Every structure is written in structure tokens, then in C-alpha cells.
Amino acid sequence: MNQIFSDIPGSRTWSHVEEIHKGWSNDKKYYVQTNDDRELLLKISDITQFERKQHEFEAVKKLDHLEGILMSRPLGFGICNNEQSVYSLFTWIEGENAEKIIPTLNANDQYRFGFRAGEILRKMHENPAKQDQEPWAEYYNAKISRYISNYKGSGIPFKGADQTIRFIEQHRHLLEHRPQTFQHGDYHVGNMVVTQSDELGIIDFNRLDYGDPWEEFNRITWCAALSPSFASGRTHGYFNNDVPDLFFKLMALYIASNQISSILWAISFGQKEVDDMVQRAEEVLNAYDDFQTYIPKWYLPSYRD
Image (spheres, rainbow, N blue to C red):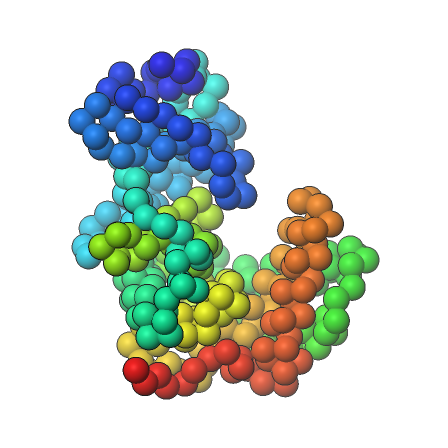
């Protein structure tokens, strides 16, 4: 047994450990199979990440009471590797990545899976944030100001940046008095799997947080680029087919803000990632008619089989 794992309780029962090379996290991730054929997900982080990883593990544990949702469930947390690393152990969700499967389905099935994704997200958001959370408007407005300032200083132009920033500035006031709940933090098709039994599973909670539940739609652009039917279904499923107009305005605000920040995020990953994010930002601008509207073109207001 690898020295990194040897002091993890139960590791002597592991018959197979295989590193997973996927995702943007700095964690090392492993697929684990036990002697009794259980499948596990192991995450290893540097000991300096102890508090953050403990927070992540405890937050996911608070979802453990949710029934009827297929997701990575927390099993164990602690220190390993001669006190140099932190481990987090979760259940393994076996399935194909939804990003690969959804485009192969017909529009009805794409919508059905999207609707289910919305239902699952709504259940997750039933877990409120602590009462002492910083007011959302203060927190997110500071974030927006930082995003815009950093973007302007980056020297990376993209078509429609002025319109995007103007829309953000005109809609900041909508952040006042927003509720705060648990957030998955990176909720899109890339962090979902489809099982052999046709069930949707949710993975990768390493960006979880607490905040406005509707901010969770800031990455729905990834879903919409893959399947407008899935993205529309996700919206309808979340609101049980009764989507308020205010939601679209806030979703547009969060998506606009996310496009500005994503370009800066991509810089450390190289020019290709920067180019990809600039292209995605321009696609978002097109979906919103240069932010002359707050309902995107990909959205299907009603869906019929």
C-alpha cells in the first residue's frame, strides 16, 4: 500500500487504487475498490488545506439527509501521509460523464435530464446558510467591483465587454435582500454523470459555498452550449414550471459577472484557455443580444414532447 494511504482507516482492505486525471482541482483524486467490491472516491490535499477541506466535508455531510438524490456521499476525513496530507473519502458514483451522454440523446431525454438536474439543485438549496453570513449584497457587490477592476487591468479585450459591464452596473441593486443557502459551486453537465440505470448523479463538490441559490445558475451557459433543451429543463425543474421574471434578471447578472471573472481565471492556464473563455463570453453576449434583453435566446419558455 502506498505510504500516502497507509494510515487511512480501512486502507488495508483496498484491493485497487487508480489515480484520476480529470478536472481543475489541485487535489489528487483516486478511484478505490475494496476487497468486498465497494467503490470509493479518495481525495488527497496538502495539509495546508486542512480547514478548507474540513469545511467542504462537513458541508457535504449536511446534505446526507437528502433522499432520492444520487451524489457523492461523505464517508471519512482526516490526516494521512505522516501528517503531510488531508484525505476525504466519498462514495463513488459509477456512470458516464453527462457532458458526453447528453448530446447523444433526443431532445425529450435531454430536457428530462435537465428537469431532474433542476429538481436536485432545488433540494440542495433547502439547506440554509448560517445566520451570521455577511449580507449577500455587500459580499457580491465587492466581488463584482474586483472582477471589473481586474478585467480592465488585464489588457485582454473581448467583444461586448462594455455592454456586459454596463448591464452589471445597472442591475447591482437586485442583490439586495437575497437569501443564502448551500451552493454546489460548480453545477453544470461536466459535474454530472448518467448511470446505466438512466439516473442522474452529482459529483465534484470541491467548490461548494454558501450564497444566493440563484447564483448557482451562473454556469448554466455550459449546459446551454451543449443542449438548450437540457438548460431549459434545468430551469423548469428548479422552479417546478413556474419561473419568476426576477430570476432571469439575476441569472443574467450572475452570468455576466461570471464571464468577466472567467477570463481572468483562465490566464494561469495558458492562452488556449483564455481564448476559449473569450469565445464563450462572446457567445453569451450573443445569447443576450448584447445584454439588451435578460432572457437568453437558448431558453425554451414552454416544452412539449
